Length: 190
Ligand code: 2AM
Image (cartoon, rainbow, N blue to C red; front, side, top):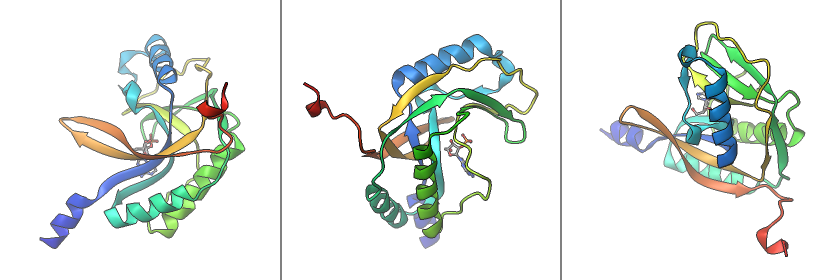
C-alpha cells in the first residue's frame, strides 16, 4: 500500500531548454515540407525542447533538492543554432542538433547531469548529444533533408519539465524555470 502511494507521487522529470514559439512553429512547418508522413510520429510543436538532463521517476523530496541545486547555478546564456540533423534508427529518433554545441550548453548539461547522478538519478553513460527530437518511432530508413532549418535562439533560461501522459498523449509541462545570466532585462531596455 505504501509503495503504491509513493509511486503515484513520483513524477517523470527532466531539465531542458524550451524553444521560442516561433522556432517551434518554423520547425514544424519545415518538417511538414521536408519529411513524408510515414517518417515517424511527429512531436507536437509545443513539445519540442532540448533535453539537458533526464531524471526519470522522481519523488517529491528528491525533486525539491534538485530544484534547490538548480537554483544555485550561475551561468551565462548562450545562442543555440540547430544546424545539424540526424537519425538514430535504434531508438527511432530523428533529431535536430548543433554542429558545434556552445560551451555554455555543454557546461549546463554537465552540471545538471552530475547533480542528478549525485541525487541517485541514473544517467546514461552515453556522451551528451544535445538534440531536439522531431520524430519518434522512426525505425525504418528515413531520407534526411540536405539542409536543416538553421533555426537559432537565445537560451536565456532553463526549465524543469514534467512529462504527463493522459488520454493517449504526452504533454511536457514546465514545473519551474531559472534565468541564465547576462540576459538583457526588460527594465534595462529604454
Ligand atoms: P529523446 O527526445 O532523445 O527521446 C523527455 O522524455 C525527454 O527526456 C526526451 O527529450 C527524451 O529524449 C529524454 N529521455 C527520455 N528517456 C530518457 C533516458 N532514458 N535517458 C536519457 N534521456 C531520456
